[in-house]
Image (cartoon, rainbow over all chains, first blue to last red; front, side):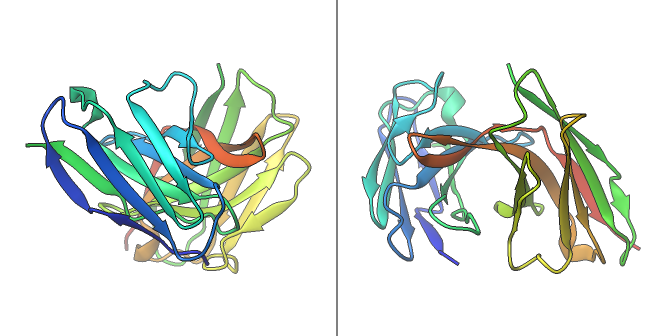
Length: 107
Length: 120
């Protein structure tokens, strides 16, 4: 199985801050990397697929980059509705594994 | 707009079989993969497996011996069965639609989740 790691595991930030979350795969996954946002008690929501393609309807303050084994999710200006947990997921090979998540909360 | 509605028993005893169903409303059933994902309390996400409209399945090896995913295309539904459950199977179970965009695979539509508790 491909192991996914994320850093940091949690962070505190203020509205308007630029936030960067890192995801690393245990082997090369090309650009087969998705990012999801999950709020408490809710299902995950797809933000970005193929490492950098913004899902329809997702605000442009979200962006993704990377390929191979190292990826980043960036929120350019954190908004109140962005406080949530973020998961990366590799879709390069089955089983489609997720990272452990990064919780973004209010400073 | 596509919606996934899921249901099933929420409380099970150890050794029983978990059974959940997910129905697809407002969109096509063919051409997609239909997945199950779970999330234990306070923990991360685990992909359980998936099925396509023609019935081809792919399971997580960690659960493969206990999992069966099936499809009923006439009803636009797919189902999950997980046998011999233990407390470790307590989780929120999500159904989701897997799709390809530009050759890349992702889960773009999710059900709201069903909480399943295993307790004697």
